Image (tube, rainbow, N blue to C red; front, side, top):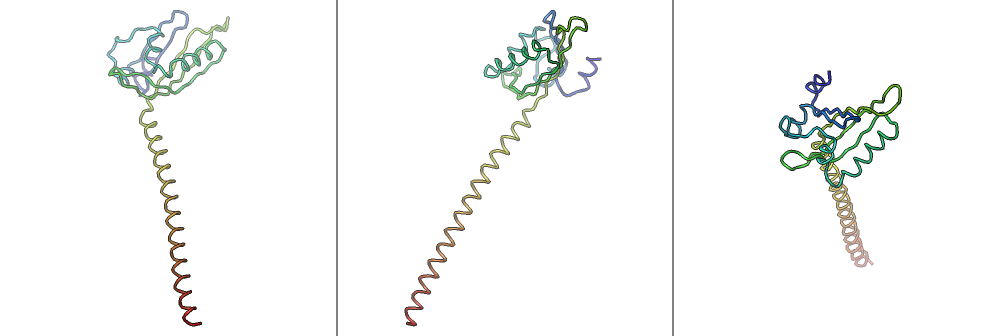
Length: 166
């Protein structure tokens, strides 16, 4: 079933046996991150090594906290290295399964979604909003300058006309 689900989704599905530390990678890793089938070692350390160095400690600590804290779900956004060395922005989420008798965590399954395009769109949106705010401020400044200029012209011409009438 897990293999069928992994074929039916655009996400990279994974299954981590917490007892043996063996990690199964779904075909989505090939599609999203361009790795060849069987290229990645089936150990959790392999997944950790592909997390951007600036994100790795935070992500690994949050996964450990979810597993050790008795939680059932976990999620994080971070950068994941593609085969060509570039990084994809990803949203990773997992579900921790516990042994029914001992309540000890035994397995974690999850999926990784590539959100690089969404992140770039958000960055562009923030940049556009900042530019729009700057443009609005400049527009207000120009209007104030124009009002001041018109007021000065009215004052000067009206002042001259009143002086001439006087």
